[in-house]
Image 1: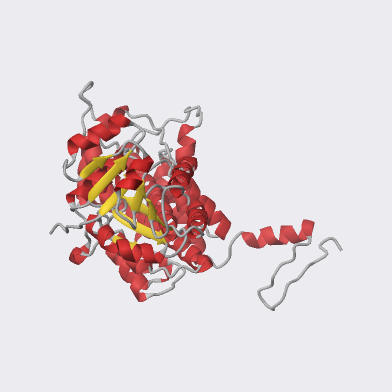
Image 2 (image 1 turned 90 degrees about the vertical axis):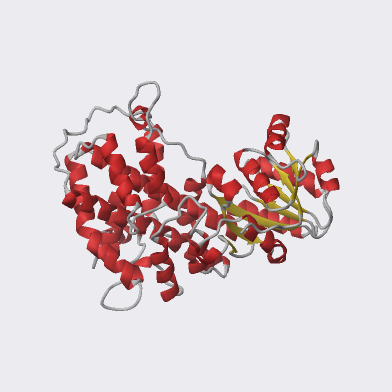
Length: 467
C-alpha cells in the first residue's frame, strides 16, 4: 500500500537520481520544490510529474522561500566541491532547525565535517546514502542515513514511505549513527558491489573460455543461478539479461562487442582507502578495484586464452555455482568486517543485522542469500568476521574444493580471476597455522631492529643477528 506523506520538500539536483527521487516524493503525496541550474532538466521533470505536486524554482533563494519552516532540503549534486558550494549558498538562506539531507555519494569524512560546521549554526544535517539506480530512486531505493539523530526521527516517516519494502513490508531504510555513518555504510555497499560484480564477471569469462560456452548457453547458466536461492541476486538477474541482449547492428549478442574497460566513480577506491586507514584486510574488494584500473591500462594482449578444453556437464555447473557462492560470501565478509571496525572506531551503534535488512530490497547488492548473512549477524553479535559463524563457515568449507578447481582451470586457460583468487588466498590465510609474515618480521628486526614477538613466551624481543 502506498503511504501518503503530506510534507513539503526541497530538492536540488535533477540528474537521473534526482529526477527519480522527485517523482518518488510526489507519488507519495509530497509537495516537491525543485531546482537545477540546467533549465532543461526542470522542464523534463515537470512534463513527467504530477503538476499539482512538482514546483520548479528559478533560484535557490526562491526554493527556500517557498517551503514552510522548518524546511527539509535534499541535495543530489556532484560529490565534493559542488556539494560544498551548494551548502554554502544554502547556509545564508536557511534558519535554525532547518535540515539539509545530502543524498549524494559523498565521502563520509566530508559528511562529518559538514555536519559539525552546520550544527554550529543550528542547521541539522543528514548524510544519507541511497542505492537502487534510476529505477530504485523512483520506485523505492535502499536508504542509509547518518548524522543528526533528531532530524532522522523527524524524517523517518518520509524516508520509510519512499524506500523499498523488504520482508514483512518493512521499509529498507535505517539510521546508522552520527556523523558520516550513513555515507560510510553506502560507501562500503559500493565496495561490496565492486567485488560481487567482478566475481560474477570472472565466472562468466571462465565459462566462456574454459568451457567454450556460447553466449546463449551462458545466459541459460545465469538464468538458472537466478532461480537458485543460494546465489540468486539482482546482479545475477541482470547478468542473464545482458547475455540475452542482441546487438541491432550485428545480430549477435551485444556483450560480444563491448570493450573490456570498466569505469569507476570513486566509492570503490574510498572503501579500500578506509580499509588501509583502519588496518583492515579487504583484498577481495580491493582486487575488484584493481581489476577496473588494470582494464584501463595499456596491455600487450599477447597471451591468448587457450582453446576450450572443458566438458560442461552437471558437475561443471555445480563447480561454477559453488565458486560463485564462495566469492559472494567473502565479498560481504570483507565489507561487513570493515563496517564493524569503523563502527567501533567511530562509536557508531551499528547493528549489522538491521543493515542487512536495509539491503534486502531496492539496492544494487540485494540478494536472496542475504537472509543467511543476517541470521549469522543475529546469532553472533559483535563478531569480527562472518567466518566465525558456523553455518557460513560450513558453506565455505563445502565450496572450497570447487573454488580451487575453478582457479586451477582459470590458470590452465589463461583467464585472470582477480577476486576469486583473492578470496581463496584470504580464506586460506584465515585458516592457516602460520603466515609467511613470520619471515617478514624477522627480516624487519634484522635490518631495522623492529623487534618481534615469540610464540613460546610473552614480551618483545630483538636479536643481533650477525653476532
